[in-house]
Length: 488
Ligand code: UD1
Ligand code: MG
Image (tube, rainbow, N blue to C red; front, side, top):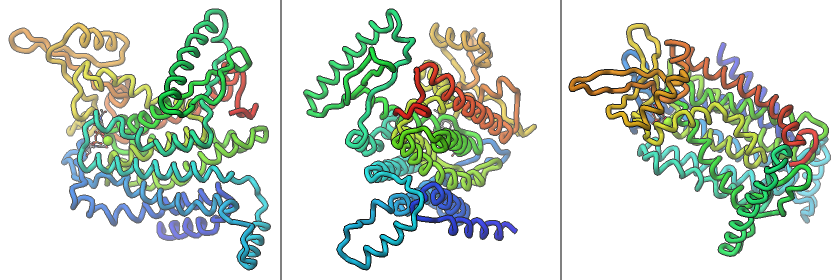
């Protein structure tokens, strides 16, 4: 039965592939990606285990050994598909109609004439597309190195910024818009004076960078008095984009530790971003530039969902494989890429809200204000098969660490327990600072899959609310919405 279903999917995929129908072909490729990953994972699992790419599922009674880094299968399948997708997306621009060869020319002319939909990518998008693929290749390699050598956090944290360089360079050459809209109400009274000072500082730094490098990063003068007020960030906008490419992969990697969560949250995020893209794609009043940017984003997200859903089937509780850091970096970078190339890198942040909350909440542990164990995943209780919060312990509390934990405990944001040891020593035990543990502190013990589902549903609800907020409160706050106004 399942084989018939897969065969049907394959037939649908092949039927849907068509030049110059980017969305339709991306969907067909998504189906192909799904089928390929579904078939490949069981076939390569043993080989991964043989070379040491394996890990113990710590939340199961006998802690079975599972193949790790299976996200590599999804990442490589995705990269191959995205390369094969090029002619279908850029067909019109890859073909030279001034070709001297009469036969070739007439063949292309016929194909071109057969195309009714002319909403195609402009040629310069190909550079963005290729740099995105290059960036994902380096990111996948970085993730693989991490899985192989367990690179230290302080070393691996900044590496995605290097992987994203090709993307930023193409952004510089191709698009180079570095100004941001300031909500008009912030410009009232003292606000305008403050922004003038900020603008003065930004301008100074940019002039200095220009003097040193010869590269001009500011594209237009800040126009703080016009409506809507614009602040040109210049070099700071590139620093911001680098920060996104660092944050996005790392934030996925630290919201992890229960079956299905790394890949589950990535799929939900991709679906939310895709919904946001479709808000633009179905609108008739947006500019061609906005349409193309969101088309670009959708084309990267649709096949990503295909290769990820297949991975989730194996990673869902009880997991048969782990996705590895390779997948976390790869998926995080897909989001950074669509945010940057789709020109909605600020909107991306509101969709990353659960990851941002998890990161900010975990800061005291990540910066070692309170101890951070190697694994912060919840604790599995063999007797009832449920997950309980895991705890870190503070043996030598000082004013800062114990004060912070007491505040968090008063706000019901941490479960704090005091243990009296021998020699009148006091140890503070605190639930590890991740939203996974916090969910358990609030809701009580849960089975691993229920816990994962609760977090994913919350993420979906937050994401959908954010789409609604983005297109209602957003325009009101900023004085315009690029969905209706057509301005990027
Ligand atoms: C991050 C988290 C760490 C969390 C780990 C789980 C931070 C700073 N680091 O570390 O707290 O414990 O991810 O992925 O927040 N594992 C399971 N079940 C799962 C997923 C993973 O038991 O569903 C275990 C396996 O032993 C697997 C290992 O976690 O081999 C993978 O850990 P790894 O991804 O290398 O940890 P980090 O990303 O460094
Ligand atoms: Mg990890």
